[in-house]
Length: 191
Image (cartoon, rainbow, N blue to C red; front, side, top):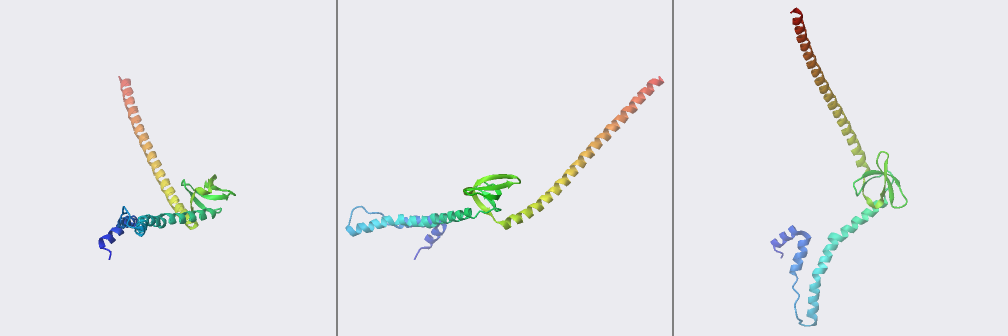
């Protein structure tokens, strides 16, 4: 029976912990020989941890990576005109033309087209997401445009009000200066 502490340690450490525990459980290689068969058994026991490590690496690292590469190759072969793609550099665009070789002509903005190597594609965007996102973006853009127009109108009104207040203050000052000038002139004439 396996002790509970060992089970909890395995659950916490994962596959790497399993490999380390398996290596710790193997008996050390003994010096000196006790006979022909005993030496062969010791050699098997010394190779067993290496075999175990290779098996764990195969199932945890090598096999999933091979599957991922195979899926990526299939994706690259299935790129068609009109697909929305994302490059490894982060550019998002629409495939305009599929070349004979390894190149694609991709439109990244209206009337902006670039050639992209097929191998530099990171993913193909699903079509249904594109249309839903476009509708949501259009609605958000319209709301932002309306908000910006309202803000600009309010700012213009505030600027106009400030200009009128400045003009009114200047007019009041001009009138006061004219009145003072009239008083001075009037006072001088009467003398």
